[in-house]
Image (cartoon, rainbow, N blue to C red):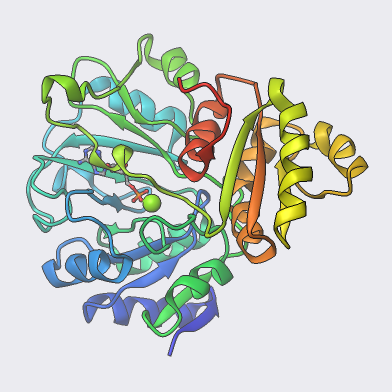
Length: 339
Ligand code: AMP
Ligand code: MG
């Protein structure tokens, strides 16, 4: 049986007991919900991969409370990483360091680095303080499904498969943390998110962005970025804003053939689609709203419809880099130019 509990002294103690007996527990964070386990316990880490169906070359992020002594798990801490921590942590930024190798070898899937995150969500901090150890916590969704931004989403994927979900309300961030490599001379973004390249560069002067060159047989630094993630269980058709007319025609022809068709678009497009009778899911009017709503709406779409017409916002940069990256991974392209 899977319990959903609000965060109280009792539920935190229950979570701690479960964690120290090798179980996995779902926890809220400000980005998405995580499926947490003891980072020192090989079996707990293996259980996370099993329960999620996660490929075993996709490493996990260790979550710690804000006063945790990093030197226990991090072998080298460059001065620029200290600056980034001061500027952005606790918050949705994961830093990758050379590892001391103290956590289970299954955490980093054979890499000699460790990704560490200090979430700002109060419930996550309370839980991490209660357990006092690093907790590895990938997003609490079945592998390849849409990431969860509420306790209910986690329940929908893991009912009967995990003992406890700590309910910390809806996530305010909505997309996963920015992952930033701190093993080189300057930080390099491995996965974009709510802390943007521009924000990082402002603090430390220079920030790179990693794109693996597979043609040269290079070893991928962050295997997770290669996987198709986040897909809703309905057919998705993606259109760029400049082709919104085609999206409208697609809506009309799809609704002749299929029972459930819905449209996911920015607020400014809603009126246009409602004119042709479309059921619209409102992505919002600014970048932060779009990030916060994206996964929730993709999960709603799969309940509502067989076909989802998606209008991709044309805005680039900032948080949109992360939002568009997730949106494209979730959707089968129609007439969006590949970048
Ligand atoms: P998730 O836990 O589903 O949010 O995914 C974790 C992300 O962090 C994936 O994209 C991983 O590839 C990345 N990651 C975790 N650990 C490392 C590491 N040691 N080096 C590089 N990337 C990592
Ligand atoms: Mg994930």
